[in-house]
Length: 329
Ligand SMILES: Nc1ncnc2c1ncn2[C@@H]1O[C@H](COP(=O)(O)OP(=O)(O)O)[C@@H](O)[C@H]1O
Ligand SMILES: [Mg+2]
View 1 (cartoon, helix red, strand yellow):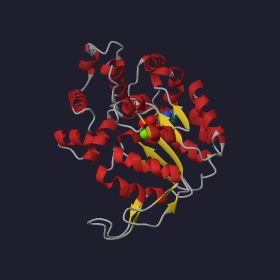
View 2: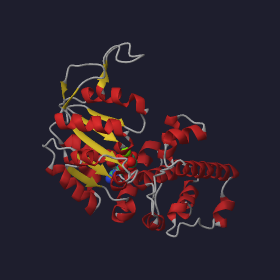
View 3: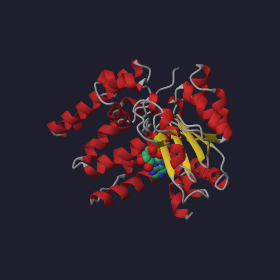
View 4: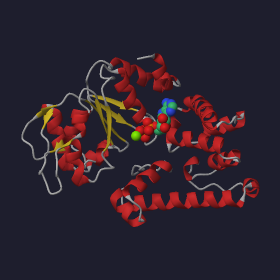
């Protein structure tokens, strides 16, 4: 692969170390487990592993285990034969088959129900599987990468994740640290995003030294995704600087003691009413989302039901607001 593909990993010592791991496993087929909070760059690393491997001309198939209703997971993974169950009116290939000669990326692996964890373990041991309702076995020719933002030790301790599956998956384990632990990358990431969005939206915004210092200081609980969104808002909004100020001045997570900050009056009076309302609504939405998720212990099906949105909308909102499951103290 060209060195350009790796440019995003050149921004700090920790990502450079991850790049070296990716390079060293490039031409092996070992299974990789990616660990890290939401928004740290797990998808990006998974794609880089695929791109660096001999399979790079093959497909890269991402399966979000949390986005598929549990009852459909097995068929989604392994496919089914016609007549396998009510409604199976024709043969359907599973993602493992589509990923043949390529890489399958199992995101949010900790959300897999235990029954499917057992099935996946067997498949990974034998490197073969059968479609649901079929008896022919199909050999797997796929590199497996799995990822989660959950604390797997804790999930295993609670009996929610199989230890044998964990050991099968973590042949190579890559932990991607949260952005607050690699602040040295923030200036480069920010200027990279700034250049990209200026170009994309035909703007010419700049970050002052003071803004940059604030960015480095901020704790980015939504990690690189939150930083990316903040820079995008800054570039797109006509009063982006205020949006930006609001972001780094506010936000529960921006403050080490976790207390909501006192709003800065000077900023509020210069904001348009519409902007204030928009921000208020967004903040209220985030708060409701976090409250409900916490209450139902991140059971997203349940949260979607309570909030009266579709499952898919809920996932989008979670991603949008950069919510992540906080670990119990
Ligand atoms: N090192 C990086 N350089 C540039 N963009 C990054 C980097 N890490 C993450 N991003 C961007 O941040 C966002 C979140 O990354 P993603 O890989 O989806 O995180 P995760 O899968 O851990 O939630 C994506 O838009 C991604 O392109
Ligand atoms: Mg991801």
